[in-house]
Image 1: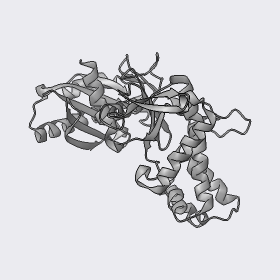
Image 2: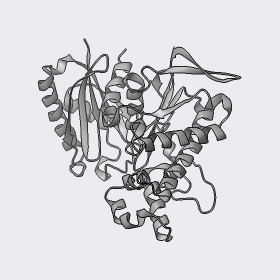
Image 3: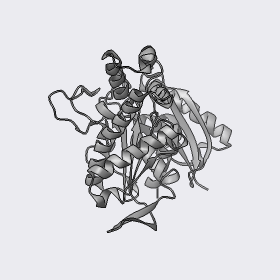
Image 4: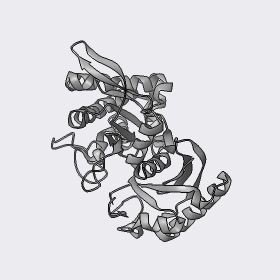
Length: 345
């Protein structure tokens, strides 16, 4: 049995885990990143965490075939370094993080975008593992017994992350920016919403949790009749979950915000389908409104499907699976380990 180490570098905490060659987690853990101390100190702390989980798994460092490191971008993957990353701070600019982590851990580390790693995890051992291709016929989609070979994962949170799998492997683009779909332009009007990056009309300015909170505050400030008014302060602490809670209680305005979000997401999904033509598009992250386990989540995903069907070519909308992802917060380190495995074969 071969074993792989996955590291998911976060702005607050870094998740680590050891997996076997089938994608089963042997042991996992988490260490504080303390980004203000800089990358050298963080790598040493993560290496200590790796030593801890190796001991818990009863393994030696030599038992690990390879490791994978996932981080938020922008990054230079062939150059094994971060670029001007906003969520880690000035000390992390242009640092050769993959080589630093390799040295600290004593294990060669492959480098990946965190959204790409999460997507690979979903493909390898998550929702995509047992998914089957659809084919188009004049009567609509027909399922097959062939496994999917391409998919996209959209993660909804502060922004919109995107990971792309084509021909069973992560697609990063020629300059490591291939999954920055949160910055795709979906609105060119003069009053387009401003993205967190400072530019107008971007996808995550409409479909992210940040966008939901902003539109909710605008609705409240307009004087609309809604139960959300009494919970305005909660938006800054609880976030988009407030909108879900009020929608579940029957507030029509809250439900409309969620349905509008589905519409905006569908616009971007239709464009993805026409550009990449994937077998499946999965939605994960912090803002899934309960996913398939809740009526609100099921309403949300069906609204996305319906809007996509109204906007996309039938050959795309009938054959592309649209559903929620499965793995949750562990997807980053699982996918990092999976990419390391794929690149060692």
